[in-house]
Length: 325
Ligand code: TRP
Image 1 (tube, protein in one colour):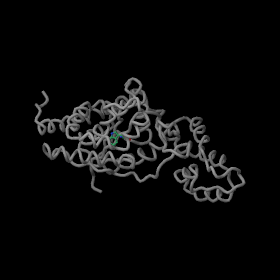
Image 2: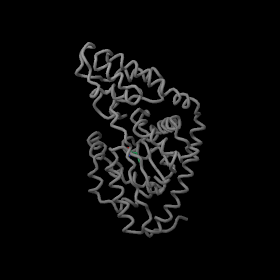
Image 3: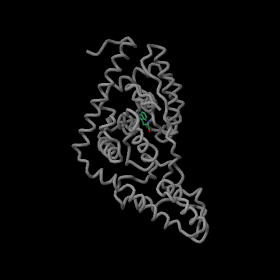
Image 4: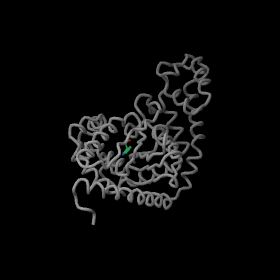
């Protein structure tokens, strides 16, 4: 693929976990090799479910530290904080003028969030994908690495962009999803997708004791009651994780099938392996001081803002608004 501008964001709503890493950040690190990347912490988006920004602040810092620790490189990529590019809020407003309400009400993510927080179905939640679209097109992002759950948003964003371009002037390129090929990462309950809001996560840069506790709490093969019974690795979530962390995972799947390893031992082994695999990330994170992280975010946000301002000059002209003074 030719070098393109890639953009993606992640919401600062809890601890950085394995689903975030295997499903997103790992791929971002790889994309930096070939593309011009913009990666940001979506703190405006976090306000759709936690309106108190003070509670989001520490999470922005934590999440940025984690992203840097796992290999997002600020010398290669623009790493920034969404709300430090306030032009994105203005663009959201302007895109919302060409977004039919029925389109946003239809998205699965909206329906799901509205069900989760029935007492807080605010306008910001409805326009979540419009803000997401503004994130992308304000820097004229072309490729958007996302998981399957975000494809509906991407489709909607493309429609909004087409409509904007048709209504005013062709300001924006149409972004497309770069689908992350990772299979679904389930949480410690073995049922739901790993997610901060479900509370079924396994961390990445957390201390070994924390990781051990999380991994040992994983639900294993429910059909296997006794250690002497053969296991069913295909349907066991712990075995699914072996695929990510052991080159010889098949060997362990065989042991499990032959009842030569118990579920608890499998979890203990997995825990130690994960702890060891992420040791360099924990060490890199421990080296990051608050000053360094703040400086990286400030500098990255400044860079993103320069690009955003330029886009907004074109947008205001296309829409028929006065130029910035
Ligand atoms: N909506 C994404 C999520 O919940 C996060 C996000 C916000 C994003 N803005 C974006 C992803 C722009 C890609 C591009 O995971």
